[in-house]
Image (cartoon, helix red, strand yellow):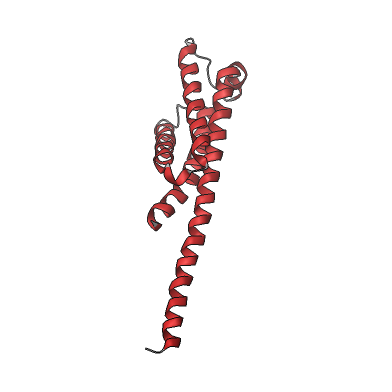
Length: 149
């Protein structure tokens, strides 16, 4: 094999490695963005449920429950998840399990809404669509990063 052939082979190998590194960097940025988007969405939703439930529930055709403890616990859960997603966003590749957990919860909620689609209020349908889109946005770069490692 001539020196020119060896140099060409090395260049081709390096180009593939550089392309993989660039693509991995793009997916890392997309993963960070999706964690932040999911975190802000959960925080805004949690704060809205916690403090504006009397206004939001009628807008989304949801009845105001008699026992507010369930509403408050749900809001606190959303706040905790949202802040944790924001906390882990900068180093998301080391916290892929957070994204997988977030995806799982979002998809389970969407599936439950789909199962009872006729009986579910409009607000839950809208939230299920938003959760599904955010879940997909977290899922795509997570899969790309896991497959490239």
